Image (cartoon, rainbow, N blue to C red; front, top):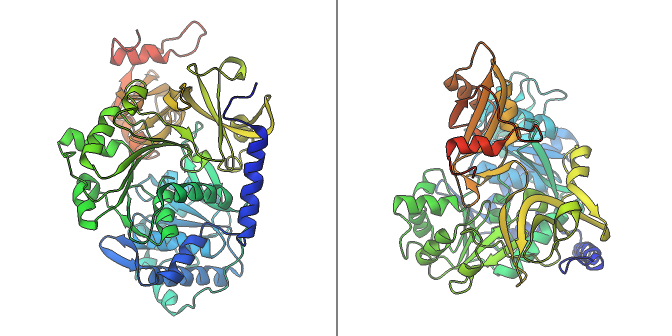
Length: 555
């Protein structure tokens, strides 16, 4: 019998109704909300980045110029445009320019290792890259070895084109200043890809997740109805553009004609000061941010007096953190969101209630709540059979926020995007998350069913770290574990390695990992072992390794 949450007919209807709604709106797309806001509120501030306040009119004009330059130089609408920028005005302008040009935007991050960025750029097969001044010096290394035609490089920041590789096609800032604005935007349809993000992959290669306009619009419609934001709202941007949660901040703000306030790295060390300065009304971050504030004694009552919405996602939200934040932002409604990139930003939500929520917490973690309208969920146990309420299993989700699959990876797509026997014709995404459905219809998150972990809000495939470690000279085998773990999320990575006779230097191995992995994936500690412990099935016993770090953990 199909679970209560999943009615195959209603799921198909959700897809059908969503498509017809978009069609009636003349192929509304992810860029539509910003364009509407720019027409209605041209003089209002759309973005604050590094204290540079940019109006909707200015941002629209800049983005149209970049889009015009790209389309003009390519002689066609691009398919994918990279945005190689970090929390800068150029980054946001480049994102809009890609959408205006009819392309998908592909965020790239200068804080990542160059090798990782190079892989992302190569896999995306970019037609153009918009580059900010701080990222430009990395371009030569990023593009080295990328096969095929070189992408068009666009440099909105004066002088930054000097860092372009010799002979690379480019558009410099002075040329953009003379360029016209793209008025007739290339058409897009709901099934076109709006953005392409890369997550951690088990083979050591980043895994591409293409999100369509229809996926994103369903999410935005649900969120807009739920939060009812308006032009007077001011939203935080705590996330890097390579983190899919950043899409919420940007496009929820611009759908409403509101102000997006981009936080720099230093701002995240004192979030309440930033929130007061900019009179934020909407806060969105991973729970690690308030947890760090708690450890530093900064999460004090009334620290965030202007907030009316406090949202958290990306990793488990501890009950103690929720309670402390609610006291710090007493005028706000606090919600815990859940969702992998493959289900478009977030797909479940729980509204914190100081009276009722604590009793629903599992292992001290706030529930993930219920699926969004239009989405279905089922919990699978042994043999992929649905389990009863109160039993643990893997969460599978269906509906219009389910992305088409993984970028050019049919095998991985077939593994994770599946039809289930009790719901023929309905496509589910297997999240790999262990959950339990409570009697009241809410869900609680219990951890991962595989070896994927959350590290400081980032989803990490331990296999990717292990692949990098095994590529180092002298390493025979490697096992990575998240450690220490609290409330289902890890503060860092510990690696266990076996070495050849030549041995391996722990510091050298960490340095090797740092050349290929983002900092949050680099092991903070390397432990050399003579041999990996095995379980009864002959597989590496990860629990035994964890027990070496904490003798009570393997009990």
